[in-house]
Length: 564
Image 1 (spheres, rainbow, N blue to C red):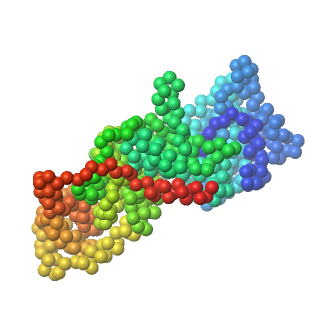
Image 2 (cartoon, rainbow, N blue to C red):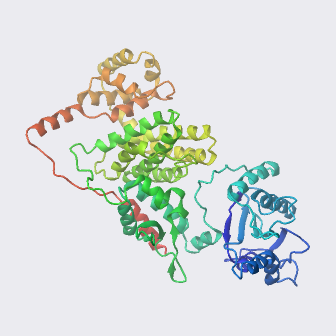
């Protein structure tokens, strides 16, 4: 059961919508199921003599009194609106059950506490099987405004109780950090235009993906504009500096004018102030230069993701929350530069994890600077890493699972569910990308003598884990990877000990597979030595200012434009 609290200023306008046919004639049998006074509330849906204006006047009775006291100045945003909808698949409630829901919600939110004869006037209108709309005018009979602080959160808590008592689907409790859901009007508009997501949802995902890749707020706005998104900065009247911004999707208009969404209205961590915590205001001068080893960004990102698992176990929640936010950036950039059918799964995982990257715990972004920089370097990567990308997905898969556990331990139900969804999509993406590579490595396994030598190295380096590793179906693939590492200048026995020490293997279900990907991301020692010799003889690489790859974002923007 989902409540969605908002406020407005037009009582009659909302009544017209509630009792009207709907924007697509979807409203059927609109009628009042509960009210502050069932005898005194005119019901235009059941009484032919009742009019919208009569109902509006009855609801606005105390508002009008307060307006006269204020010398004709109406209280701002005095219309309180809360649709309450059952989850898909739930049974349809009766009018009597919806009436009880409405009375409990207005009591819990402070609109009309039980036994308060001075409470606000309100009605609950049902015009569909699966939801009601609760409407109130927020001026009490004593002229005071109701105490509705954290009303959305309190409505959620009451709905969780109602779900249990009514035998409905139990939804996850929130903590006021979730983004705003699209309104019914926004969904209807998207359906009319043949789009699967609303403009609000599309803008949110574009903003997250761009913020993950860029290195300054200036660049953030520049890349958004390159995707066809209109950007309107808000300038402070006294300082002349940017204090906020709004975005408008391509072709999203109302009465010929762009429909704007403020950054904070897309998601709390997309507000201008939150972005400034993670991005400098102006472009940075020391952009990364092209380096000799173009696989290095992949190495750094994989190491940062593995290190983040240790951070989640550290007990410092603010630092851990900062690393989860940086992990969200890493997922977006990994999806941005991925090649292959698994890219769609990675994109879906990144979108799902957006809900898991924030909670009521304030993130320490400074502590996660190294992780965030490693994540951003992926957006500038130009090298096709092959197995490196799969190793990175494998590491991300394990961090997502650790994020599920971290959120569950802290009672973050929505975040844990989002991290679980991201984990499932990462798992699907890994299977699509990794299984063919493991199968190819297995086919290329070295000869028996070499395999026996590696088995000896394994038993010497990891005696406690050797039997499990040898029994793992990925052991033949691991022998191929060990042979390649040996060719690259590594000592197999020493290398096995080193990668095993990076993180415990006791909980690994497939330890050979874990070791295979850890070894895959180890630098090529012979190549490093060759570059070192080259640098001492005067060889150099021309500096280059790479740009983040926005091909995927651009294609999505163009696709949206075709639906206009």
